Length: 170
Length: 392
Image (tube, each protein chain N blue to C red):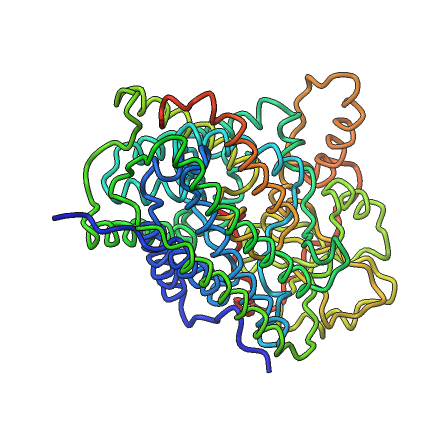
């Protein structure tokens, strides 16, 4: 089956914006992504070292209450992202087990970069209390001051380093 | 007429299910925009495909204009919205780092989920990296006190209209105008750099270029915003009144000193784990009535589990000052109740001594009589505040 083209970016953006607005109105908060890894790490740490987890400034809040750390709106929302992404890719004929990379890098090299980039982003999303979804997109749409600073710095960081990792992509 | 906002769901399951549905649309929109493909996202930083910028800013202006227009028309109460608090330096440094990780992995946390869901191994590996990085950061804040300070510095809710002393609609229109200009610029930049790199074929082929259509769409969006703002009936959009943070140790000192102005309220829905001694319960529905009985010039201090719940003093008596405990009950436990490590350097010795004294007092080991236990009236009334976790 031949893969369909992507949507016009402004159309995809409008649907994304309406979804974000729906999240604002229904839940009183925006969209997010890094909440799931944070809560998963909190849950795992709580199983191994409950006292340390409760005292940890980044994880303590997720295990403070009686509720299960994964019983949270944002966690279910990320599960929805998996389903929505899967359905979208399937219907457009884009579901494919493969590795996206430029022509000048091996699969192993690309996956090493992906892992390293993921680690850096895990640290970054921890420090900034959110990622491109929770800070830049959701906080940006609410005109939150810190979220705009975050958003501008994401682009700054990407452009600052792009030259050095160009072999991966072009 | 203010719409019920956020929607009060009958059961927690229904509320969680709404997250699943909204997340589904989020994932679908990202996939349709091409955000499951790391090459397409990375192209943003080599300027030959600016899809990231276009999708992201279109989404921002739609949601921003929609939210501020509804709030401006008085249809939603903006003070009930969870707005990301500003931790400026943590966000500046974290943002830069996230950009670095973004171009290394080609994906950001949200898009890595969609990438994995469409079968991409690089997406799955990125998620594994994010989980490792999250654990690394959690461990690192315990090891390096300066990192914890960086992480905790700030926490006030600040929105640009308040910061710049501009009415929200001016900011909204300004962002729409800037974004529309940038869209036109992005279309031009793409053409220049596509010629430079040669047409790089992304899987699958990008849509045929239709700048007019895109510009028309951007223009329509701007029009919608102007029209919706024209209907603005004057209901002022205000940021939640910024409430001053107060350090847990300062609260502890005030309690020990029996500060007569201090009035403590517990905002938690579930008050089973012991709160700060002497605190009275407070929930949204009864807040105004309860606070009316607070003596004039009182210093009202509020706390929740972790300092993330935002409270606005809308409709509350104006002759008292409101503060919230920075970091909530979690910070109270770690900064007042937790035993202090002995190996402090000279500089922090005084601070450590202070915390040790407070800890001893509240755990009952001090010579001073403990303050009265927290008053518990009735059950935990009303599920007013949903627990809000920090951003994404």
